[in-house]
Image 1 (cartoon, rainbow, N blue to C red):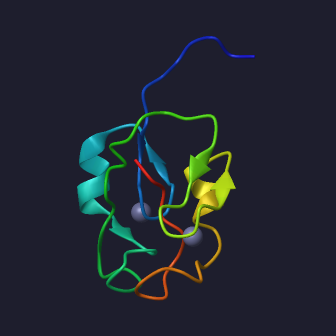
Image 2: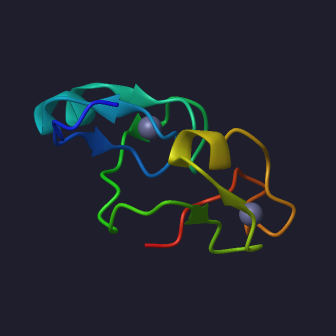
Length: 85
Ligand SMILES: [Zn+2]
Ligand SMILES: [Zn+2]
C-alpha cells in the first residue's frame, strides 16, 4: 500500500482526478449538469471519505467516480448521482 498521500483534485460531477487545479477549468466535463460537455469540471470541496454518499438518494460508493457512474432516480435534472460534501 502506498503511504505517500498525493493531493488530487476531484471533479464533483464525473469523479475524474486532476494533478493540477488549472486543468479542471480548461477541460469540459462530460457529466456537467447542463449537458454533456456544456461546462468545465467542478472541484469537489468536501472531505475525503471512505464512502461517498449521493445527496439525492443516499446511495454510497467507495469513490466519487463509482458513485456518479450511474444515473440517479432522485436527481432533479435526471442526471447522475452527486456526492454529498
Ligand atoms: Zn467532471
Ligand atoms: Zn443518487
